[in-house]
Structure formats: C-alpha cells, structure tokens
Image (cartoon, rainbow, N blue to C red; front, side, top):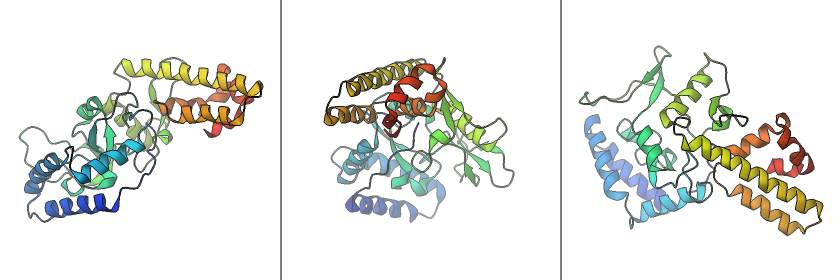
Length: 269
C-alpha cells in the first residue's frame, strides 16, 4: 500500500454525491440511515450513472499500473470501496474522500471489518456489527485501519525484500503505529494470500531488470527521451510499494546498491 495521489473530482460529481448524502442525513433514525445508505448506494453505483461514471474514472486515474487495486496492488480494481464501511458510517457513504478503487477479493476480506482505539479506554476495539446485533452507532474512537487517501501507508509498513516479501510493521510492538500496521495487514490478508508475496517478488525482479537496462542504456549515451521512457514505465507499473522499498532499502541490499549508485536519479522516480 502507498498513499494514493490526489485527483480532483469534477464539481458536478461532487454535487451529485452531496445530494445523495443529504438524503441519507435527513433521515431521523440511525438504523434507517444505514438501510437507506446501502440501498441508495447500490442503486446509483452503476454504469451510466453520471456521478459514479465520473467517480470511477477519477479513481482509475489514481490507481497504479493498469487500474490496480489500492490495497493489494496486484488485481484489477473493479469495486468502489468504502474505507469507513457504509454499514457503520452512513454519514460518509457518499463522501468522496471515503472512496478508493479495490479488487473484489480485497473488498470481500475487508468488508465491514473496522476497528477504533476507543475514546474512553484507548483500547483497539472492533466495531464490526455481528449478525442480528442491534443497528446502533459504533463507539467513538480513532480509526485503526490505515487510510491511503489521507495517510502514507509506507510510514507504517515496510516490505521484506530479502526473503518473504511480506509487509511488516515498521514501529515497535506495543505502539499505536505497530497495532495499526498489524491490523491493516491482517484484515486485508496482504501476506496470507500466497499469490501476493510471489507477485511482489516478481515485481522486484522486474523493477531491477528495468533499472539495469536503464543503467546500461545510460552508459551507452542513449538519448534523454529514451531514458525518460524508463522512468515513465516504472511509475506506471503495479506493486509500487515494491519500487518504493527498493529505493528506501537500496543502500542495504547489495544487488541494488550498484545500479542505484550509477543512476541516482532513479531515487526520485
């Protein structure tokens, strides 16, 4: 996961979202707002709806590679995901900053899983509503899940490039930052789906090979336009977290140190 780039939504789409949100907010009962939020979102989140056609086009521009999932960075993103679940927070069901594009698998794993550090105790507390539980507002607290729309996940997560290609918490155990990283990794199953670490390993080799070709072509005096093409290709590939970690850890990994020393400009790609 990396922080998603900001891409402004059109004024018309923002107006459309606001109108839908006002309709939800106008309902007097929380349980009624939850039910209406689910129903209304399902009814308008369809091809041909001008507001959501614009939402999806804008979210697509924010994705890495060929519309990769904002969570796993591997599968094609095809579902508008609510970072704060609509079943718990109907007040943001049509909030633009609560959306990202995710794949169906990540969306299924996250679903309405959500936790907060409870305001009264400070403890990590799940606010997911159990089956047939009363539909009441979740307890107040600070969200645990890392939000890539407003936060930089790379400040919380690192990636093991030497062995497992698993995401790991950067902070020490017992800290809030560690708990947030661990929770996010677990709920999205970023390490437990075997295909993902394997795909990250392949991405590492792919990025490295691209960098080596760039270094070779640079040493041969190839035109700048040709060299710039490599930078563009790297920025447009899936698994951008792998490339970020290669830059962050390049001085610690022997096979990265040499190519980056010959192409230090790549650290800014």
